[in-house]
View 1 (cartoon, rainbow, N blue to C red):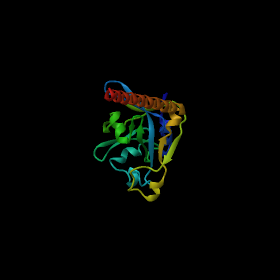
View 2 (view 1 turned 90 degrees about the vertical axis):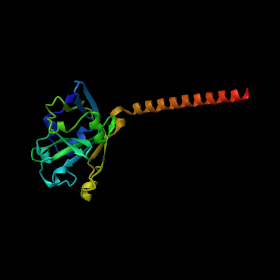
View 3 (view 1 turned 30 degrees about the horizontal axis):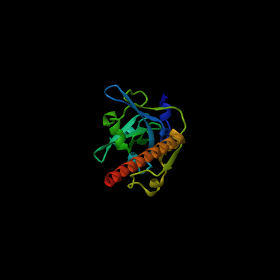
View 4 (view 1 turned 45 degrees about the horizontal axis):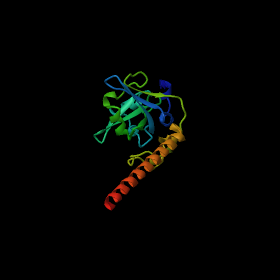
Length: 210
């Protein structure tokens, strides 16, 4: 495992979004413990010309961080309740970012920030040097699917159709045998339940017969 460097973030958002699928989101909590969760889903937002991007209408107090050099966190509040973690990518002055949509154990950007205790106090955090929030990779290649982004009805039809949401293929991440074993375990549990149910019914019938 190695930590992502400034070079890893100095790419366009689509490239970064693909690379972050299967990487590890790392968070050091207040008690000093470090929680690592594998990233399962990302979305790319690509500059002022992307009508789904927050920076579409230009630089504001909120989007100013998106114009920074790649490698810092952009965290904002959604619907007044969900903290959303984004990774700023690319060159300074070019507002691009990757939304982290899901990690192991937390599907959805709001759920993962709650799980890892990520909030706006970490906005603009330097992901290259921070000891509170960073990303790691083990260098392995994973497969993923590409699909249109979610929740961007306000964007142009063209941008709504862009397949800039990337989801980890779990079978390639953990191996097909992992799912085969889990399937076999479920079958064994089901058989045990069926046997227990049969025994219980048989005992009940015997009691009534006696």
